[in-house]
Image (cartoon, rainbow over all chains, first blue to last red; front, side, top):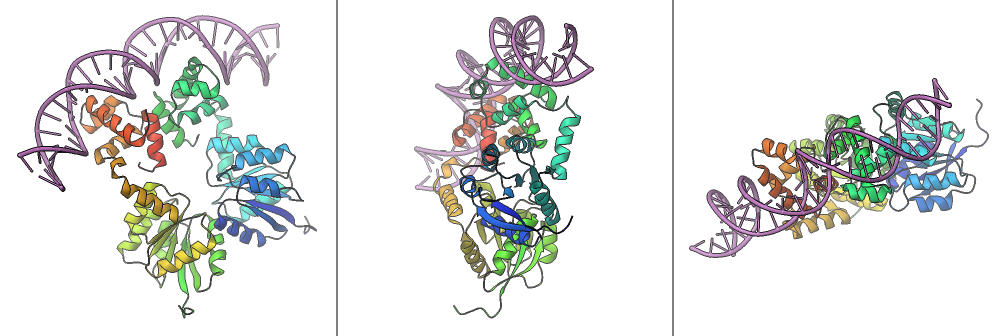
Length: 208
Length: 208
DNA sequence: TTGCCCATCAACCCTTCGGTTGATTCGAGA
DNA sequence: TCTCGAATCAACCGAAGGGTTGATGGGCAA
């Protein structure tokens, strides 16, 4: 690899000024990377994503339009690749990001060098996951018996809000009977006997 | 106020390199403020807190020794004033920080100018709270009726592990009837209708 | 002293949850 | 093609949770 003729143009999306400043300071120290824009939320990001951006570095938690939804919109309109840079590596966050079309998923406590590597890879269209995230996915793949189905994870997420079976049925457009069936499977897979314990276990295992 | 002869020496404590870099970049743009050290967790912070630090800017969520505990240790040994800079303004976080002896509490999405003001105030020993945090405290003071009793919090903590009423009764040395009574009171105070939602609400408000 | 809150308990009743059995449809893969 | 898992649903029943009413005793403050 020779020195790039044109620097990689990056759009930063994060609701915290401190983080945006930090990212900008870090990235401007990297050769071949140029920060060409900042956005404080998803809506602002969508208005700035057009002109020649090579990589979008995106937080998930934001007021208004969140990072997952924003990523969906960007990929839907064939926008630049998105690198998710967030605090949490729960399974539901990671899966949602991948589903939304994110090219990379990195944790905020990553070392600067890893961040640089991830941005270059993302710009090159190469999928990049931090080691923790990769381990999480590998774990999911290697233990298919113990892993929850996507539908079960969806249900679990709703469950954690305190919804009753009736509410779960309504929000997932299925019958209460099906909700119960899913719950039984979830209990079996998590090794618990009731919904409260299931939520607790799911939190421990970072499923939600 | 004239220009300070000596700049205010700041120690940054945050587990995210990105945030530390951002804070440093921001603070170095402020006149009269100098970053003299960084720490990635509470333990490291304690070793660096001695020599002539004027203000400690501290995150709460950190691996190992968290920001609240670290603040307690620092204030216990008459260390420099601590300004908490964090993402969340839940009731228990704020209360815990104040209890631990923090002089200020600011959110990470605060504008840079507010951050500068807060650091100067903290160095001068003047307590500073962001407006959201202040409103939260006011709210708590004005509505003492909504706070849970100690017994109720105890029960709530057990509840969150997934215990049934029978188990709760056993572990708290009371009858199931009493457990139910406590639960009803908890539900009323938290504005929910079942145990799962109660746990969720309690987590949101960082009561447990 | 009186009133109030907290913590404790009982009895009753209804709703919801949890577990079981059995079934259908559909898509992926051997 | 056949199999298997995922997802869907129904019906049933016992266990657990949730709501109500009513009661007792201790501590604290007006």
